[in-house]
Length: 246
Image 1 (cartoon, rainbow, N blue to C red):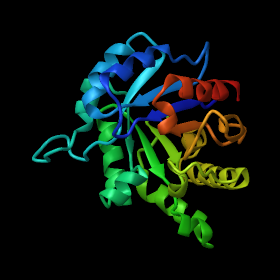
Image 2 (cartoon, one colour):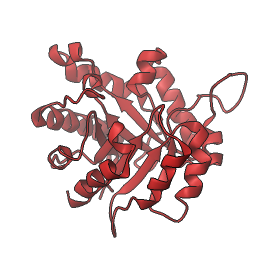
Image 3 (cartoon, one colour):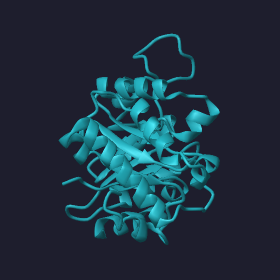
Image 4 (cartoon, rainbow, N blue to C red):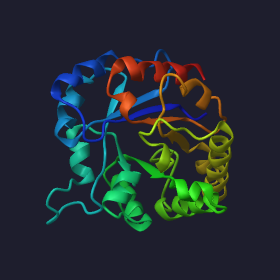
């Protein structure tokens, strides 16, 4: 059985004072896995605050190389040393703002594996692509190009995030979410067999306490990658509770 995952991406937000709320998050007995990805300068302090709690800490990005002359970048092994257990790669904001390609995302995922981290590989379409006839093919191509051949259910999570829904308050219809997640599951199973059938697939894009329960009803939605609603425990805990109840 795939364990549900509630992952929070703080993006370029957060202060040391905000970390105190992390220790209040709970998934309940046998509940979902909880992961918070704060900015890199807060990683070690976040890991200290959550030590002994059900909350795990992740990074928001990593470099494909283990070390070198890459000013401003961070190696996957550095995230691991700071207390991270996972790292987001290929987020649409990285793909858009830094022109990251599927090949670069795949290399970052491989670096995460080498460092002992779970890679949360993000894929998703623009609004123009959603309205076009080839939307699912575009998402499938991203999935194939961004996911390493060495991906397993233990080292990889896929996060489907329609770009047009991130931070906009707009959410795809349940029919669109179900269709897309079912396609992703079919592709993963065809490529990786049992590992693909057991790989977790998250939905992300304006997930809130008010819509989480409905989204989590979909069979192949194994949790969520949450942005703004993960910054405060009062917003994130109801999403975790909805996932636990799904």
